[in-house]
Structure formats: structure tokens, C-alpha cells
Image 1 (spheres, rainbow, N blue to C red):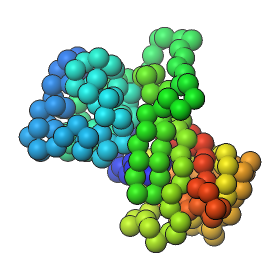
Image 2 (image 1 turned 120 degrees about the vertical axis):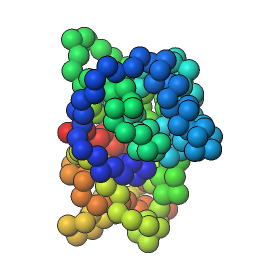
Image 3 (image 1 turned 30 degrees about the vertical axis):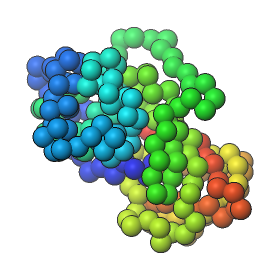
Image 4 (image 1 turned 60 degrees about the vertical axis):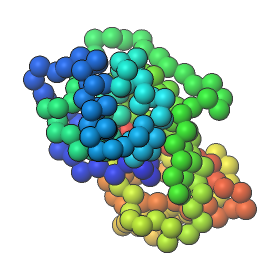
Length: 204
């Protein structure tokens, strides 16, 4: 996923006396305001929707582990300062759904992401549909890289996947690929229309 580039210690950092959602929201709001950042600034940098960030600050939703990690990086907060949900849960039979076109949009210079099933907390997979706007690999200032593994399925159009250790891979609708997302990577559309893909990122 393009906007998330992390170099953190690991997915299950432990903290003591974790604050509740209200305290978490207050800490995030305070850190944001101390940096002079707007909701839009932080939401864009953390690759989440503005509405989601507002809900977190007002204790109206419980953010997933992945979202907390992004906020931690964006606001330069230390692990003990943030409430990290445990990846373990005794709850079974959970579900979330997203209606067509109703995902949370996050746009960058090279991608237009639609994040799916964002209300489900403590999930380790991050599904999203992306429109690939980039037309040349030179549009990426740096390799995209983040912890975990990714699955990508081409929904429409054609593209080239550039990776750090392999030759460029040309892909068309119906093709799929699975790779280590800590390896530098980036996609460019090669069809007349911008290619659309389904991505599933797995935090490991």
C-alpha cells in the first residue's frame, strides 16, 4: 500500500495501563494540535479517512491496530503514549461489510485508495481497492515498503508491478500476485484507463 511506510519494532508491542478510548482520542488531538496539523493533514499522512480520525478523537469508534500504528508514526508518539489493542480476541463470528462505492477514500499522487471494512477492529488484514494513477515509475520518490505481506488482484486495465529484487511484472485483468511488502515496490498503469486492483495487506 503506497501511503504507509513504517520501520517499527513489531506488531504486538506491549504497554502497561493502556488508556481508554477517551484518553486515546484526547492524546491524539493534543499531539495533532501541538504540531499545528489539521484533521485533513493527519488523516492524509496516516492514510485514513478524515471522518475516521474525527471519530477516534471523539471516542466514537475503536481504531484497529493498523490505524493506531499509522497515527503513532504520523504524530511521533512513543508506544507507551498510545493505546494499542491486543491482536488477540475471545470474540468469534465477527464481520464487517462495505457497500459498493462506500469505502473510505485516501488519495495520493500515485494512487486513489478505497479502504474497505474499516469499522472492524483488531483485524490483521487490510483490504482496499486502488486506482493506479501513476504512469511512470519515476513518479515515485522512493520505493513503497511496509511490514507484512500483500496480495494484489487486477480488476481492470493493465499495469506493471516494479519490485526491488525482481524484473518488472506486466499484469492484466484477472492476474494476481503475492509478495513480501517490506520489499520495495510500486505500480504504474499501462492501459488507456487507470488500472484498478484489489489489495489485501497482511500484518505479520
